[in-house]
Length: 211
Ligand code: HEC
Ligand code: HEC
Image 1 (tube, helix red, strand yellow):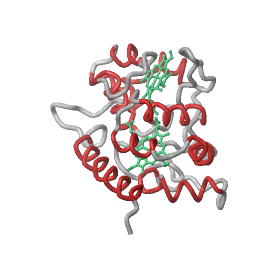
Image 2 (tube, rainbow, N blue to C red):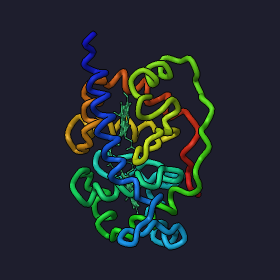
Image 3 (cartoon, rainbow, N blue to C red):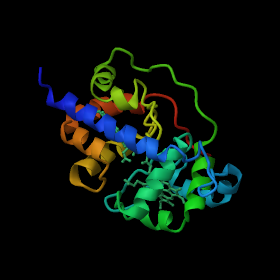
Image 4 (cartoon, rainbow, N blue to C red):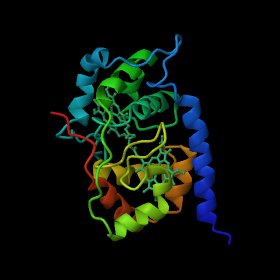
């Protein structure tokens, strides 16, 4: 029973697992050379971030982008994303200067502040909808049923802004984001199918709008 999509997803899951193991020290297991983020220290430098990432998104860029919500995002994912803007894995020009202005410790501190306390797993909105079924079948292996994602280093997409999620898939398709697991998935998911699934994930309650 050759199912190329499933094989690609499994291969991706293995890559993700490998990457997450390599980075699982971020935030959770501090070491002398890479101390954990300090949320208190991150509060002040995070205020500039919330001008775009807060409750009223400051649309930015041309064409304008809806910046993603960050309060409640997974701490080690925020760190990895900031690192990717600096290291070239993500090439969105709006974010690059803000990431470049932070050193490694500041990235960890800001990530700890923005993540906040761990969130309980939400109950499912839109249970039984087409989006729910498709999400479980195609994305749940990594993102989980509600988009919280069980693996370290995974983004929380639960309750994320729909326009941002849709744009993210496009970035994997056209090479502006290079994470191997998602590039394969995005290329095998049509824009219409992606919209059905992402409306479902966006309708769950988890990421918070900051004041
Ligand atoms: C001028 C507006 C603006 C400011 C200020 C800003 N960002 Fe962003 N940020 C964006 C946009 C737009 C995106 C989406 C870019 C993309 O598609 O890659 C983004 C994406 C991100 C992401 C990726 C989130 C995800 O779900 O993958 C992280 C993490 C992030 N920003 C952190 C920060 C931090 C930390 C700061 C402050 C040091 C900051 N941003 C300041 C506009 C901004
Ligand atoms: C093999 C595991 C895997 C599968 C299957 C998978 N994803 Fe992902 N997804 C990831 C990883 C890992 C990331 C973070 C990649 C990065 O750093 O850019 C991600 C990121 C994303 C993002 C960007 C979130 C953000 O905050 O920027 C979206 C949107 C997304 N996935 C949607 C989907 C959808 C829709 C499906 C199903 C059609 C899916 N994913 C299936 C592993 C997976």
